[in-house]
Amino acid sequence: MKSLLKIEDLVSYIGLYTILQGVTMEVNKGEAVVILGRNGAGKTTLLRTIMGLVNTRSGTLALEGRSLIGRPTYTIAKEGIGYCPEDYGVFDELTIEENLKIAMWKEDKETLQRRDYVLDLFPDLKVAYKRLSKTLSGGQRQMLSISRSLINDNKIILIDEPSKGLAPVVIERLAHALQEIRKHTTILLVEQNFALACAVGERYYIIDEGRTVDEGRMEALMSDKALQSRHLGAI
Amino acid sequence: MDVFFMLLINGLAEGALIFLMASGLSIILGLMGVVNFTHGTLFIWGGYIYIATYNRTQSFLLSVLAAMAAVFLLGAVFEKLFVSRVYGNIPAQILITLGLQVIFTDLVRLIWGATPITVARPDFLAGRWVIGGATIVHYRVFLIFVGLLVAIGIHLLITKTRIGMVIRAGVQRPDMVQALGINIKLYFTFVFAGGAALAALGGALYAPLTGSMSSTAGLHNQVLAFIVVVIGGMGSFLGSAFGSIFLGLMGAVVAWFVPSLSVVANVTLMALILAFKPNGLFGLAVKK
Ligand SMILES: Nc1ncnc2c1ncn2[C@@H]1O[C@H](COP(=O)(O)OP(=O)(O)OP(=O)(O)O)[C@@H](O)[C@H]1O
Ligand SMILES: [Mg+2]
Image: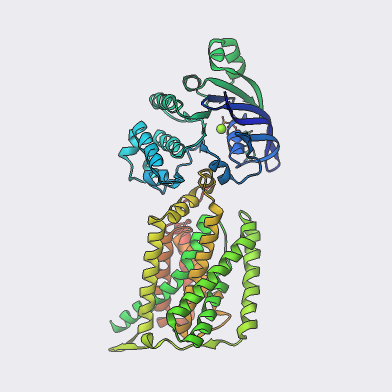
């Protein structure tokens, strides 16, 4: 399999605090990889570091062999990374249409096809298309955030805890959507909801106190209750 | 009734001038979080360049455009060289922009002298109507018209264009805008320079109104613009528009009946509004 995102011994900091203390992981093309770890482990910070929103101190971070370290956020995104932050990052004062439009790098046929594709995937967005995004529910915001990350021909999308604060039925719909999306897209998913993580992920990494502490195939984690309680008991 | 009508025209004209300053300040503060004290000096630069060009060419339109274009560039340079280094650091922003204000105001004195320079109103705007006991100056009506055009222009820019979309999104989430692959710094420079050009338009239109420009004219207008930003709510275009009209009308009324209270009235109004609406009339809730 072709390696897409490669991270080695990544250390990053916010102000005086070193948050990531050595994260190592690799995502291959076409994979869906899940990051697990308890609250405050550094999962969000890892995604923000990849996007260049948190400063790196040392280590390597590269997409298809091109280093992302020290580069402005917008050029990192342009390398082909879509980002769905923990709080969705939806622009309230923009309509759903505008939230998608602002993300488009081109308005060519392929982009418009991808737009139609996400609108079919999330019909809620089609119904509310011309409304301001501040009228959306949490689940709909998550749908918009994910749709926005798919609007360009991105190589990978990073999704930060999409299940957070959502009702079980909504999470189930989300799981179906993500299963559909992963057929075409490489996904790096931060997720504490084990059911959703299992439904989407093929491989996992566990992060604790800013370090990768375990990795493996998702089936292994699913079938091994001892492993689960060792790593995820605290969740 | 005649007096009422005259005060209305005067107030709206004054409001239009304040609006040209305040709308730029408000967007710069809302989008970029920059407290900008250079607007006063950009205003007088606009006025002086206008006069210098007009006295040579006698072309009103050319002179206004020259003032706006030159100050647009000046604003872009301010942003690139100085302001962009102090994003997120308000004390440093105040020091740097105040410093620029002082230096560039002195530069005006150096180039054009410390005494005010004069300019005539262009012929086609020089007239007035006398209705009963009131005089309506054509030029003031023209100012209202320009203010309205600019307001519509900014409104269309903000609601209908990609630049406007990025500005509206950036006011709320600049980090996310960048995470979508947009170089928001480019937009920052454009907005700062655009705000500068509007301040220059204000200065250029102010000069023929009073017939002169002085190096001290900037400060007064800058204070008014800041009051508008506070009243209207930072980052709110609608707020700047209403705040400016409000302040202009009140200024005209107070100046007519109790001229000595002009400044007191403005500040009192600001304090009252803040007491009841801490984010201003149209302000976004303060984040973080
Ligand atoms: N701006 C900040 N300044 C200082 N420390 C921070 C900052 N942001 C996060 N941290 C710290 O970094 C650590 C990792 O935070 P992060 O948000 O990445 O955790 P997380 O794994 O995403 O947690 P959760 O599951 O709760 O979302 C935490 O200890 C947090 O307190
Ligand atoms: Mg998190």
